[in-house]
Length: 329
Image 1 (cartoon, rainbow, N blue to C red):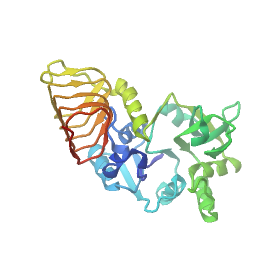
Image 2 (cartoon, helix red, strand yellow):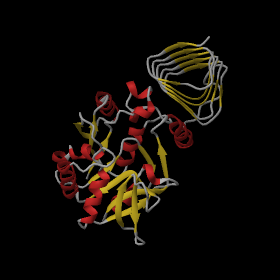
Image 3 (cartoon, rainbow, N blue to C red):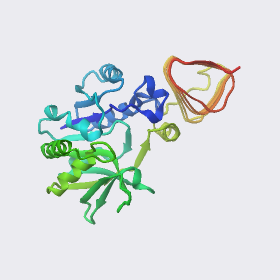
């Protein structure tokens, strides 16, 4: 069993953070999207990973090398981004007919990974949504088998959205369908989608069962990333002692990275702070702060601040990328 994780997207909805940091590595509740995915799959014994990289791919490679030195890893470069289906197609020689788990690199879900792995059929993770038109949609029979999947339908026949987690036993058939779609130029919404290939497999007789995820965290844009950070902090946040930071009040849940120096401030609730960040005379709540940043005399709410950022002054809500220096005084 191999795991395929596409992380080649440019993360345009998370700019300016994603100009200098892949969205899969943006801090989130003391972790990041990529580490949560890898830890889930490692927990069920998967040790071979295929990362599809592109934009800022060297940062993905450096992170995996340093954080997970024991993994067997492969990197495939998607230079011309033409959709998830096109990306998955690039892994064919590495996969070599093995069963695969595919988890999209901006997907955090809570689900029983072992139960998915133990099921004898191919599997697709789903969750009910109010408006399925922005998602791949699965039409599910009463016995749990999937009869049809379609990418972002204009008139959905189901409200079960595919969350971006797949177990595929018939990988050779998947690659055949991908090849056929690309050869014939069969695109959905301008891209070669994995959904179209999965539907091709289903129509050829492959059996897919659905499984429902307990929670699905959207990390694709600022507002939903902050909401996801708040929920995940309740799971991953570590306790801080009252006297750990000088003249500072910590309101849980928060996650504070190693080497931070915080004084004369109020931090929380729902705040993630990266490593080696300095904060003085500030109030920060409902925010994500990158590593190696400096905040002085600032009031932040509902904000994302990149790494290596100096911020002085007073404000309420910001979305600032890495390596910035701003004086709001």
